[in-house]
Image 1 (spheres, rainbow, N blue to C red):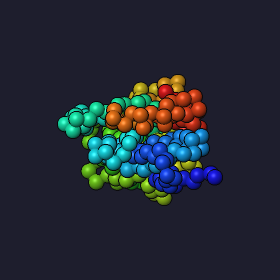
Image 2: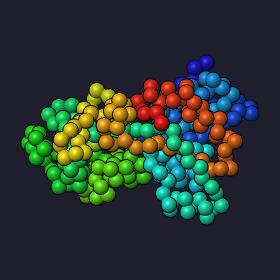
Image 3: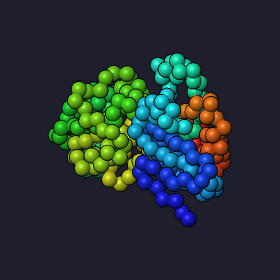
Image 4: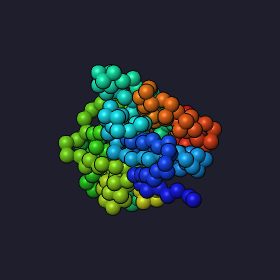
Length: 270
């Protein structure tokens, strides 16, 4: 029987001695982990994988509390998080499973189709407030961000804002899907999402990291050839004591079949 998937969970049905494991964390990685788990469970019907989002920080916290087997994260584990695990006598293992390109998106009616990193920094730190300042119409800019527990929030701050703080009062959203929905309904909006989430309800813009000399569209091809600048690694973290339990699934994700799914879901192979 084909297993069905929801946005936050794959399957929570257990048959006797079924090998079951939980994955929690990055919303960016949800489409990837869901597809990988669906394929894995079709191959091994006696094994069950459940998946929830909530953000990279939430996943790593769940690992610390031992309420998840794998934390999926769109950022590296922090020094403080490692320290907390060590204080509990736990050792964490890191596995790079794929890469993701981060797309900057606007409402489809927006005439602006390209921005420099400096302009993006100005917009998200609150210095640039109107679209006419960057070649658009006379319309207030409404920036949307992920919440602070998100790895995507941290990466965008590091790569695009160069560690400067987001503007005060920025619209902070709990999930990537919420950013897509809000921007699709708000004419002056701008935000950022993982490449796998792009759809026709929003418009991805070209980005320049060389002061406007070249502008590059977010795509798998441009991420692979390293011309698109906003690309980050995606990780699975697990406790060394759980290795026997989680390794079969992680090995599957890293296999040729698993890496094919990486490409099919809009991510970049490692």
